[in-house]
Length: 568
Image 1 (tube, rainbow, N blue to C red):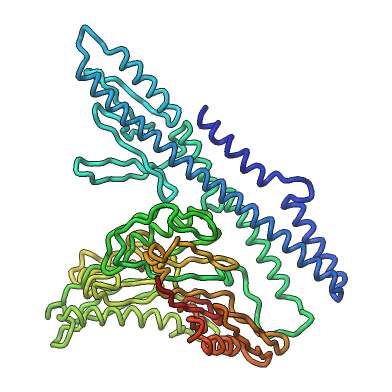
Image 2 (cartoon, rainbow, N blue to C red; image 1 turned 60 degrees about the vertical axis):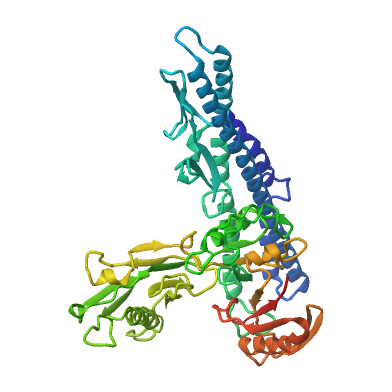
């Protein structure tokens, strides 16, 4: 019953988002939007018809934004409710274990501790309201209590706890030394009762699931954007233009804040509420040990905390995978082959061990393998071996470095990473034969790797679709510095476009005026450079420098990328 009650309470709130008053529902607003387009198609020369389309589009956009904000707020409330419920469960299991001890120690065959047993039964009843449990009584009078999937909660004097993190429910075992072992409970909904209901509703709102409420809303919005852009790109405007229109995917995540998480404070935990982004409190960010010079664990925890805050931004990591240090070849390995694929691109390397300097030196072997992988990727991207107009698609944005102990890999290990900041896409290694003594010396292992606590560059990228990113770290920048936000920070917005006519542009950077005249005869890249040059003219006063984005330096192609040095 508690399961249904929990879902019903949340559904009432979600329902208010989707069941709107007549005329204000998404269906109504979309009908008005398309009607405005129809009117414009009948009278394309009327500025009033064009303005109506813009107004209806803004109203529809506001509606989508409002619905998304409502869902994020419900998700945030569910998260708080989950934490509170799990805290109650953990408290009850401890109390039940303590009463088990008292009953076992004091009962005899002639006398039972009825008061203690009544108390225990009351606690068990409360526990079953939070989560479905099975239990039985042992010969010594103690209860053994288990979750429906078999995970133990109480056994004699021992108790186990639950934890909620990364949108997953974990079963936690703590050893006598305090070491914790965590296991994901595969289906939190199957727990039943209140906790199962909350997990089930969270799954309906979590990002990344195209079939839940948020996923379907995002799909609707993206479909609308694609259809409008597709139609718009086929028409002709009032003023000729040369730059092509791009889809919503290409222009997604317009603003970027990219920083490296501080390794000196990587082990320190940031207390919940110490940071605010766009006015929303950021939850606890656990510290973690540094791995080969990078704060990977803390970066992962920071991204999760920011994404769970519903602050209107998306925090991402950059996927990176490092092998173990290469093993030097022997003279007997000369001429042997190492063959594997990186994201489907074939890499073939022939071992050189005919005489020094050669692959019997681990540093040279690592460098040679690095060059072989990078060259294979470069050849693929440059369409080597193809006859125009044939091209290889999609392009691969992965690079290989040689580990130095501080760049994410051990000395002489191969480190593969995505070159675009905030790119969490997969790096797939395949075809490596660990039973082959020569291939095993490369130190790489087959697998599909995505950004997680052990596979990231230690850098945090925060995106927003529009507007600035407002960060409040309190009285000084001490806490912000832990995430790299008190050192050099970067910000970029949409790509510069070519104006229909020469256009003067004026704005301020940190209060200092910048003026530039954009030229219709110039390319987008040339206009972007004009803006950058104008910003850099006042950099000595503003403390801000700028560069033209190239897709790998913190901004998309032809965006203006701002860099600012701040101090505590």
